[in-house]
Figure 1 (cartoon, rainbow, N blue to C red):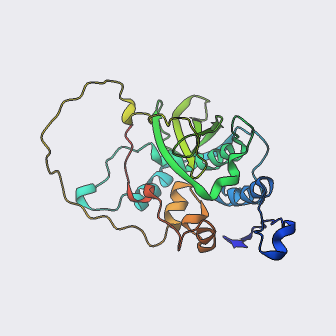
Figure 2 (figure 1 turned 135 degrees about the horizontal axis):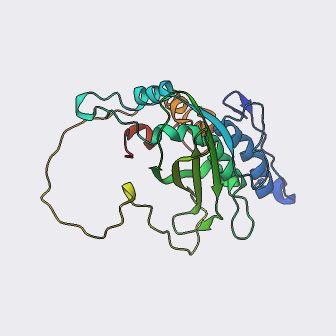
Length: 269
């Protein structure tokens, strides 16, 4: 089937009882092979038909400069005065440089029993995200080195959870930022309890004070009709957001709008 101008082959196995109504089967191995091709589209691995390597850490060289930061702001933060972007570059401007490595890490992730998680790629959702800037973001175009490593996936009541740790280093090798991402493969449930996400802003205090509810502002957000500009600046080229064939294969009527496209400027240094 065609997905984002690339043909994806999905092999079906026909059991003996198919002749009298039995259902064709897609094995885990065949699903894994097909989904690695879809993963290559999502990660924009030019010229590659599958995830590079097995247990690959997802190292890669990427470039970041003021123009990419401006592009990110232009697509995600054009909401007028009530939600005007700040003058500080948000860590999410770095995320687009990390997606190829993150998807490579997902492509190599397995469960404790050795089952590759990529077979369920069409049911993948971005569970939570935490970014922490520990160095200075480049003010001129600079080469970044991104390393993403996936831990073993765990089957929880939410689904199969895949943790991915990301380190972004500058030209001198010093760490600029770290990211902690969690993804879930829906439908692959288990007995493990889903742990809480990393607290926003790295807050560690348990102290909380009840305050009266106050109205801060009224804002209307409209979901984009086309997610391709967001894919360009965010680096997230998951075809279920940009391609109708992929969306239909995932059981959706049309490409879905990622929530990240509707929550601009959500991270703070």
